[in-house]
Image (cartoon, rainbow, N blue to C red; front, side, top):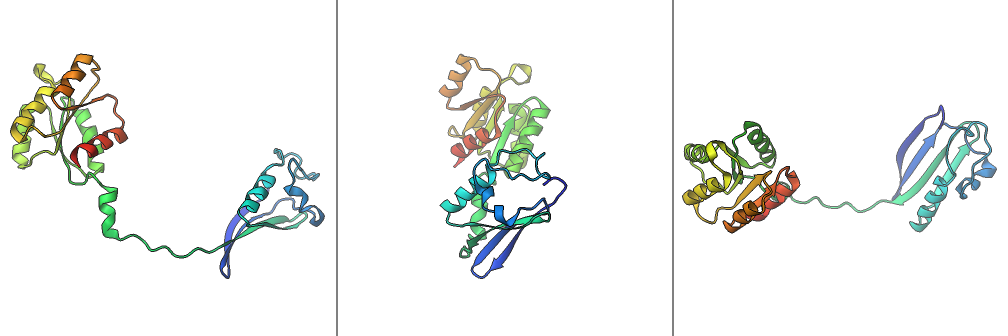
Length: 231
């Protein structure tokens, strides 16, 4: 309403809840309260003539309320404002799920040990931040040698490896994942994340039993793939 205010509120009415919308607008003459629910109906009120609209809002609301079997009530005073309300039955209280069942649903990757291999510190920092939000345990390394040292220091075995293809000194992520598998088992899952989309590389990755993701990766897709490989 131009220059007016609108208040939304709810009131208990026995076994019902009355939902109210109150405004301090131009109001409606009592004789015209049913006219406002007609399609394309705009009341001839000088105070509302400069407000745009087709006169369909209340008509649509009225139809929906009838389908739901909850009629809209109107109370208005010309020049003072209006109250639109609808009563809905109160539902039964639904018991809350047990709290102990939530962690596995909310954090399916909690505790998963992820080894990330990339020669760019910024990429490693980004992966660590993302995976940590999923409550993974993240080990970052710049190449195979660095990965061996850090895994040895932590005394952990990775559950999955994420590696970039191009590493320093002519090394690559596929060979690095092979090196990690040699230490922790040939069934260790790995994902190569790279901007290299060459067909030969993709086929080589698949032949060695790894998975391929092209940069830039979408977090949701990465999470789904990791979940499918470690669960």
